[in-house]
Structures are given as C-alpha cells and as structure tokens.
Image 1 (cartoon, one colour):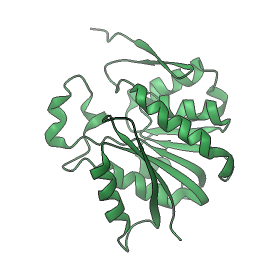
Image 2: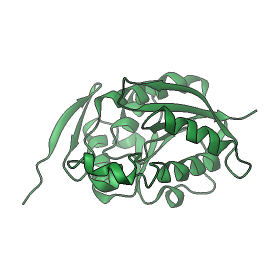
Image 3: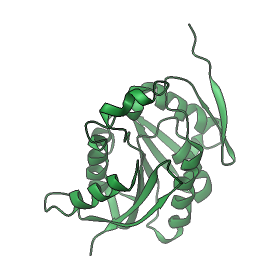
Length: 211
C-alpha cells in the first residue's frame, strides 16, 4: 500500500511529508525565525541542522537567513523528503542533505557558525501517546534526551567561535537537565543563554560558548 504524500504550509514554504516522517509542527517556525534573526551576528558560512526530518526547520532557516545549509538525518525517508523539499523551495543549489548519524555525518574539519538540532525528545515510556508518529522520529530514550546529548557533543565539536546553537526540547525540565549536563567537566563548554517556548508544545534553547 502506497503511503500518501501530504503538503503543509511552513511559513512561506510548502513542505511535503508522509507517515514515514514526523509531520512538521507549525510552532517550530519559531526555531527557524530565531535562527534567521541570530544569523547576521554569527560567523559566516553554512548552517548545520541535525535530525532534520523532512527538512522544514532547516530549509526555512536557509530561506530566511540567506545562508547555505547542511541538513543531516539518519532516516533515508527523511533525507529523501529533505532533498525533495529543498528542490521544491528553489533551495537545492544552497542545501546539502546528508544521510547518516550526526556524529558521523559531520567531518572533523568542518566548522559552522549556526547549528540547529531537532532531536527526538519524547521519553521511551511515553511514545505510545503518539501512535501516528514514527518511533525513530520521537523516541528520545529513557529520559527523552539520549539523542540530545549526541547533538550537543557534535555541536561542541563543530560550532565556530562566536557561533550559536538552537536545540529543540520538550519542556523546561529537559532544559534544566541540559544545563546540569553542560556544567560537568567532560561535556562541551556550551551554556544555555536563552529559552523560548510556544505554549505547551515544546521549547527551543539557545546555546553559546561559555566564558
């Protein structure tokens, strides 16, 4: 049986998706717009998006900021849609889509002034509340943060001096857990400097280098 492809408006873009990938959440336009607002003050070059899904957040950030983009996901269906949506938006010549784990898809010599991360953040015990969502796209492990730790580690490896990261999480309690994790000596020297939320639908944390 063929899975129907659906379209939705995401800011000025039209994003295609189907049941194999997470349906774009309209509230996450906040993350793209925040990235674009930050962009002029950050080091130049492409932006990086980890766990891109259908590509909507990263593509809108590319569109609004004027930067090129590198979009990464471990799911072949997600990267297929990210490619297709980049072409549809007229951004294919400015966007590179990479299939692979975040820690493997970014080369050791690469540096980005802006990193966006959208990891799955639903605790494993709660994924049954969302039967229509693909497990790979929402299951964040026992505390909902298993993939977030990886994204933060990659961010610490590739974020340029003076750069900024935007990390999507589920709630303020997860932001507090990230703050505690980053306070350890064996984690990246990043700090949460601001948090924005859309009602009860999720939060985005801004990360910058400490000091």
